[in-house]
Image (tube, rainbow, N blue to C red):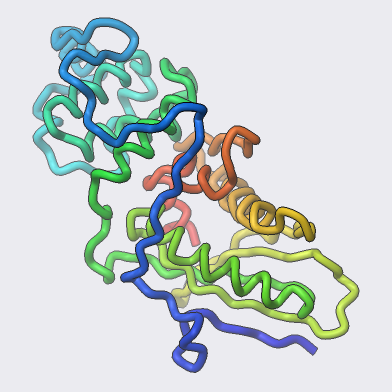
Length: 280
């Protein structure tokens, strides 16, 4: 027999999703402290900043500086990322100097999801994304614009306490990482007298009448470092689904340079989260 536990239901209030929960993006250790202060006036990326170079790069892909005054969309700068990736660091720097922190963050996100030829290393891009995520607002402020998805987990009842703990961390964290675009409601199915050991099956499903299911990922959750394995499994699940999206690059693979939880906040852009939600 299996027992299903629903996260977010009133009858299990101790597991309710709390939108007021501030799931802060963790500090990532890159060997030196990461400053959240704005760039200094004289700081440059890969050489001297040139406004003329910026205008040329924008014109090269059919854009003008007027695009900088438009209300941004999550896919903004996708074209320039594909056709003129070398201009992205200068563009991000220019926008930040102009006080356009949200637009600057979008440029760095295009280095993750749209540009195969990065002028900056992933380490540097992640540092800038982390810094800017702490100074920009949630993308979605209206709960009506948030997409609810159900994360299904199936495992042995012996793992109940661990999985409940990790889900309590994951659900508000993904809401924060996605800028309010994705709200996870978790359903945990526990199998009594199961011989599955530490195996856990993950899949995500849309909650609407035409909701679709992602593929199912079954992973071993080891006794040691179980939290990292849990977040890594969810990252792999989301990455595998996004790999089916032709207009975006695949998220970077898991790395030992930072935790899977940290990669969920830097290596999956908000545009990726939006497309992930819309596809289910």
